[in-house]
Length: 178
Image 1 (cartoon, rainbow, N blue to C red):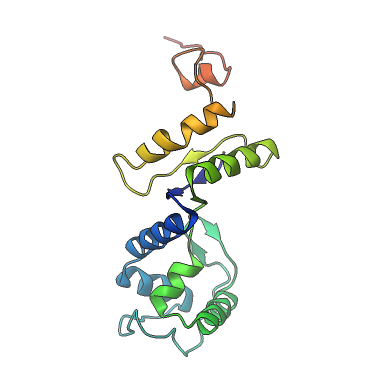
Image 2: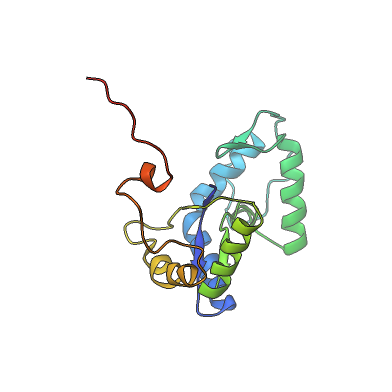
């Protein structure tokens, strides 16, 4: 059950625009510099987040971990980011936003419901852990606009057997000692 984010819009273009705005909010100029410092392995606080990536070579670190996932050596990451930056004419901050984007499902409620269902039907996931962009209330739109569509498709329950997650998963209650 992978953790996923969802961005909904009335049209696909609306959803893409909303997703881009969310990413801009998530990656502040300061966070962009800190992220690039992790890769380059040097202090880059004097760099402008709206300027180009550093010309200097990163300090090689094959153990670099960004987030919770090891992504390989810093030299390879820096080259990949430089190529992306050159290809699209991106600043430091824009490169970080583009290279580290995590939104999993972006689209209309109908498109997102169909995509979620396809992942489950093809065995790519048994379900999903929804990670809201904002709390509280970050899942309200999903609940109001996507869940009913999934229920209509028979891909999301409308009733539950018990009162706990364990019972919903068909697991017995733990034996309590005491």
